[in-house]
Image (cartoon, rainbow, N blue to C red; front, side, top):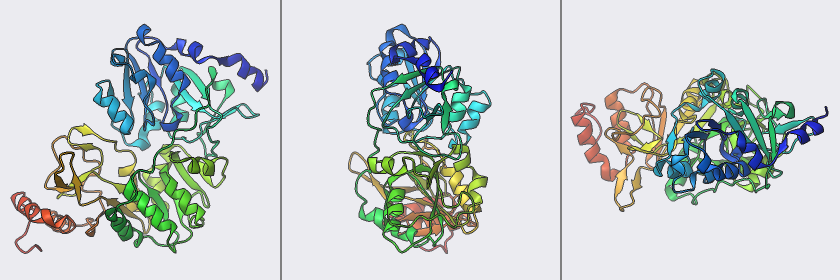
Length: 447
């Protein structure tokens, strides 16, 4: 039987395909831009027939249809591997939960059989002449997730970019149970956020000065990493490489400016490697069938051993706050969940182990609350309920608009002194008093 004949044999409407879902099933939506659209809508229409259906996703770009009804939580539970703003809204509704993990371990969860998948349904590209569907913007953990699934449904979207990959980026028609031809919606775009502030620019300038020619870059999500990307695109730096978890617009700007040759990379020379991508249409057009940009499973992109083999690896990530001991929280505001560990800890460790590598955690010195009050992001101890994303033993460089410090090899009193030195001046005296109370301050420390 030809691949075209197999395709026709397995072709179903979305309504027909989701009939396979039963009460109590685990249904996997995949990741980010690969979440299904037509299948999600069809599954939501079955709400009153179903109970106890557990659905997984991650970095959710739009509100799933199954989560919209007022009583949706009586039928479906949403489980996120990494929270976006949409995931936070689902959690706030009382029907969503976070699954703690280092993102690099996610493929193994499926391989080890610890993560049950009754039905997997994801968006893919149209089938090629050899019978392959490409995962498009995400390699991530999708190959292992599909291997673990009892039933696989692919939803074809003609607008999904076809992205080359090292491996784990395609599935063949012979391994698919049902094919659904979706409505071909535009690929969900991730906004660039607000323009960089003066604080963002100040932090970005400090970090950019630490990047040598030939460095290999990883950028996290957020205004400050994006500001660094923009500054690099406008700099005199050259022959930079990319090995990152998330591929964002900043890398496209660097490529267009001629900064990314990748010629100095110890691995995957000349190629920009990533686990998943999300951004503007500019990004999607750039990576579509572009052999310079390769997707790869996250247990490769985020593996500490792999990262450590890339000389001059520069990792740049955000934080919500940190304490005077050096613990970094990038996940929650107290008990309110914000995002997830993702790959931050892996890149913090991998960059430090890289020859010439540096890991930067950047943040503004203060944050303004909804009530208008201004709070320091450097705090005596983490707020109860806050998550220590990066333990104090792993953190290297911390950067605010007031400077940069290196915590490696520093005692508790040295850390307190260094961190208070880059805190906002309005909060330094009370931080010193807290450090004294915590017995991590010497009388001879600089005030």
